[in-house]
Image 1: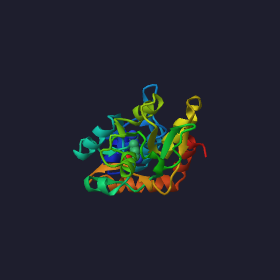
Image 2: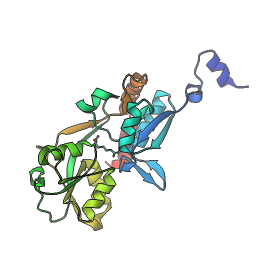
Image 3: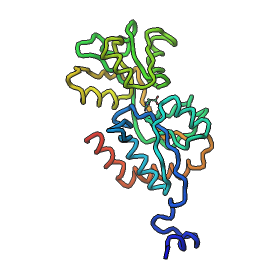
Length: 245
Ligand code: ARG
């Protein structure tokens, strides 16, 4: 006998009935941004993945995470073809015009990745240099505000790994991207001898949120679940798993 079926017919939730009949929410990402979302033997893993799974579980929602890439993810959420954009996405005023966001879940800032011995010591030093960024990120914005919009010295790439590749091949003098991403890269690739430069005066604090279509009916549920995951210690466990401390 299916007690789950009976319970759900009575409007009661058994252990699984909350998510049983729900079509999984489509969660879109750009999985080229370790440690937040990246591919490990073809599997999408990272802090954001564990965090979002915890939030979905808390909210009683099934999700399906799909690696569509950065620009396509904005298009999909904008067109309401996807339910959640999960991609270390900074909540900012521009994006709030077109999208809704959950409450913030991560504090970040842009930092500069350069080869050891570089004469770039601050954001100001980027002037006159070639800087690689991921197209359409706050990193691009930050660099363009220093070097000028449409400056030919700002090389834009579809994903951040390609920007780092450009630095390694000598086609750029620096990469600007989210602190945890450049720090993780430098740490995991010591043979490449890269260092990370912080400039608090030039690069503002940013908060990540899960990005939702305007008017998403899941916003309230997800906000509640984000807060619960932070409060009940799950967040800290996931954080420690990916950042060590
Ligand atoms: N936080 C930055 C932004 O929102 C960069 C995020 C890039 N994320 C990614 N998965 N590539 O613009």
